[in-house]
Amino acid sequence: AAGTVYVMGKLEDRVEASVPKVQEATVGGLKDLNLPIHKNEGDKLSAQIESKTADDKTIWIKVNFVTESLSELSIRVGLTGDEQRSREILRAIKRHLS
Image (tube, rainbow, N blue to C red; front, side, top):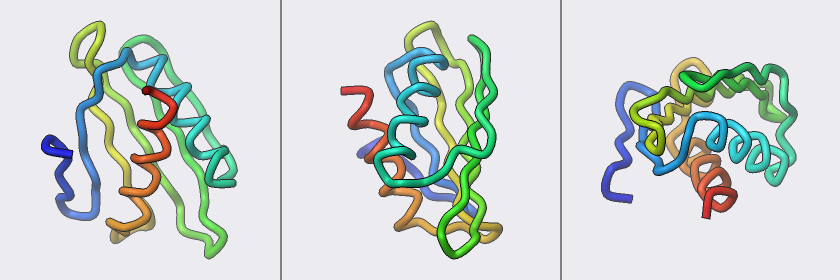
């Protein structure tokens, strides 16, 4: 994905969907990967979803409003980040948006 960047442990991308739609897709994507939902809070401007891997790494996903149909998505796996797992989570989220 051209707009996807991995910087300082975080995978960041912009997706063409509202914050609530991205939040819903995130929950669906995590469920597809058998990752539990520990936190799921959001409104029209931002959302935070947290999960945990089987090896006890916390997953933080943040969604922020850019426009009505564009959101900024940030994924971090563990304190130092895990690019491969972050990209797999992003793919799972995008499957629910297409």
